[in-house]
Length: 84
Image (cartoon, rainbow, N blue to C red; front, side, top):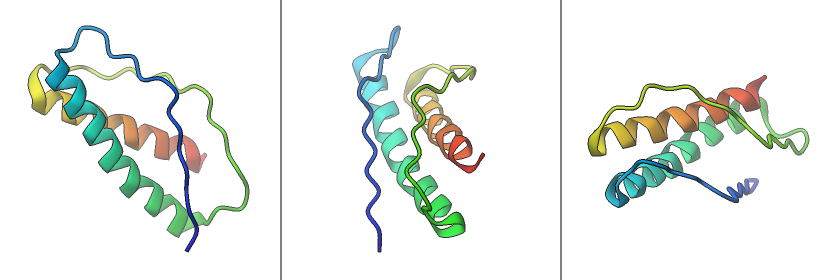
């Protein structure tokens, strides 16, 4: 089994309450683990890949459910960028 290490240097969350930011970060972490496992199983890791910047445009819903949905969407976008 290989280890995958992801470092997010900075996550800027403007206009969110602290609880929403925490929910988003938790959702991002959880979904990212699942997405990366799937990518690794499908393609394997032939080489190191760096994706320095991903710009997302997603509608933001309010409250904790919206923050969780946004975190999951971010994780899926990262997985999609690794597949291409």
